[in-house]
Image 1 (cartoon, helix red, strand yellow):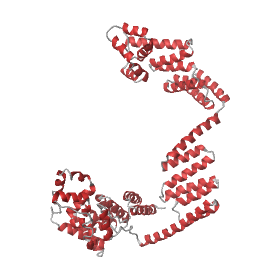
Image 2 (cartoon, helix red, strand yellow):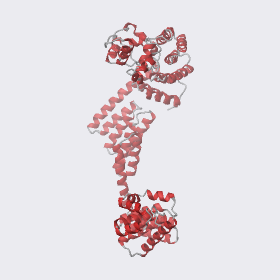
Image 3 (cartoon, helix red, strand yellow):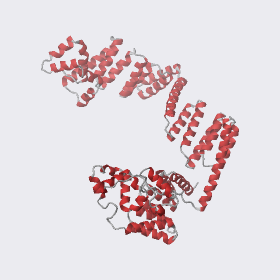
Image 4 (cartoon, one colour):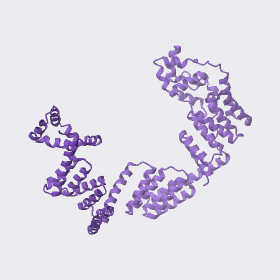
Amino acid sequence: MSAQEQAAALKKKGNTFFASKDYEKAIEEYTKAIKLYDKDHSYYSNRSACYAAIDKFDEALADGNKCVELKPDWAKGYGRVGYALFKLDKLEEAKQAYENGLKIDASNATLKDGLSQCEQAMNKPKGQGLFGPQIWQTISLDPELRPFMNDKDFVNKVNMLNANPQMAMQMGVLNDPKIKKVFEKLMGMSFQSGDDDNKGAENENDNNAASASASSTDANPNPEPTSGDKEDKKEEKKKEATPEPEPELTEEEKKEQEEKRKREADALSYKEAGNKLYKEKKYREAIIEYKKAQETDKEKSAYVLNESAALFMLEDWDETIICCQRAIDVARTYFDDLIFCYKAYNRMGSVEEKRKNLPKAIEYYKKALVEKHDDKLRKRIKKLEKIQVKKVEQELFNPELADQLKQEGNECFKDAKWAEAIEKYTEAIKRNPKDHKLYSNRATCFCKLMRWDAAMVDCDKAIDIDPLFIKAYIRKGKINHMLKQYHKALEAFKQAEAIDSTVEDLITAKRDTLLAIQQRNASGQITEEERQRALQDPDVQNAMNDPEVSSVLLQAQSGDPTILYKAMRDRPHIKDKIELLMAAGVLRLG
C-alpha cells in the first residue's frame, strides 16, 4: 500500500469521526493523512472544517488558505477561507474570499449566503448593537450577572445578540435563562418561555448563512448553535434546519463507497453464518464462512479473529498463532481499532499457556497490555510469573551439583578470584536456594569487593533460611562497622551473642567496634553527614523520643556527668537506648 493510498484510508477514517461529531479525532486522522501525502486539497479542507467546528478559526483559516493554494479553481475552498475570516471578524477579507469563490462557481448557494452575511455585518453601524458597546462593563459590575462571564456559551450568545440580534433571536438565544436575566436587569423586561418559538421561520436560509459557508465540502462540519433549553430544540425542529451533510465525495469515491457498503454487508452475512455454526460447535464449517468474510472485506481484522477463535476450539495451536498474527497485521495495515490487536495477543497468550510455554504466554500477554489496559490480565501475568519462577527453581534444583559448584567457588576464593567465586556461588544457589552457607560465602566475596549492600542482602537471606546461623550475624555486624554505623553493628553482635557469646570472632569484632566508638566520641570526629544519617535511623529516633531518656539527657546537660552514669546503673531499661545513642554518635560523654 502506497503512502497516497494510506493517506486516503486515513481521510475516510477522519470522515467517520466527523460524522459522529468527534472533531478532535477527525483532526488527528486528517493530520496523519497530510503527513503521508500533502498534495490533496481535500485533506486541508476537511481539517479546516473540523477546526471551525471547535472554534479554532486561526487554524481553520490556515488550512483553508492551503486548500486554495493547492486547488485555486475549487470554489468551495474559498468558502472555508471566507467562513474562518468571518468568524475572526475580518469582514472585508471574508467578503473578498466569497467573491473569489463565486467567480469560479456563480451558482454556489453556500458562497452566496456567506457573502450576504458578510454584507449584512459590514452595513451595520459600528459600535451599535442590541446592548451597545458597554455591555461587558455593565455585566462585570453587576454581582448577579458577573458569574455568567465564566460561561463560554453565555458569552457567545451575548456577542451574537450584539452583532446580529435577528439571527440570534431566530436561533432561540432569548430562551436562555441567563440571557433573560440580562434583559430583566438592563431593560426591566420580563420574558415567558416560548415567546419566539416560530419567529423568523420564513427566513430559514439566513439563520446559518455564515456558518453554512463552512458546510457542503469533503468533511462539511458546520458547528451547530447551542440551544438554551428544550424550547430551542422544538424551534429547530419546526424550522426544519438543514441537517449536517455527510462529507462530500467525488463520483469515484461515491462509487467506491457504495461498493464498500455492499462488501461490508456481504461480509457481515458470512460472519453471522459462521457465528451460527460456531455456536453449534461446527468449527471447521464456521472457519469456511469466516474465510469468505475475510475475502469479501479484507480490511476487517475482526473476521480473522473469528477464524482464530474457531481454530482455538479445535486446539490447532500453530494455526491459531498464525491467524492471530494475521489479524494484527490487518488491523495495523488498515488502521483498524487497536482492541483487535489486544484480543489477538491475548489469544496467542492463551495458546502458549495451553502449551505450558509460560515465558511465551507472558510475552504475548504483556504485548496485549500495551494495546489495552486490563487489570485482570495484569494480575494474570503476575500469577504466571510466580508459577514460572517456581517451575524454573524446580527444574534447576540439584543439591549434588550445588555442592560441586560450592567447592569450585571455595577454590576461587582461596586464589583471591572474588568475581569468579561469586559466579560459582550464584550458580550453586540456583541449584539449591535453601542452602544458607552459599549466601554466606557469597557475602564474604562481596565484602572483599567492598560491595556492602549486596553482602548485607546475602547475610539477611542466610539468616532468613537459618535464624541460628551465627556467622551471618557476625558478618552483618562487621559490614556495619565498616560503614561506621556502629549502633547497628552492636545490634547484630547482640543477636549473635544470644546464640553463642563464646565465639572468639564475635568477641573480637564487638571489642573492635566498642573501641571505635570510644575513639570517635573522645575525638569528636563525626561528620555532620554521619550524624544526620544516624538521626534518620528508626531505632535512634525511637530512643530519642523515649520520655525517660529525654529526661535523663536534659538533667545531664546541667554539667553533672554522674547523672547519666547513675541512670544507666539504676535504670537498666534505658541503658540499652543510651548506649545505642552513644554508638550512633548522637550522644557523646566527656
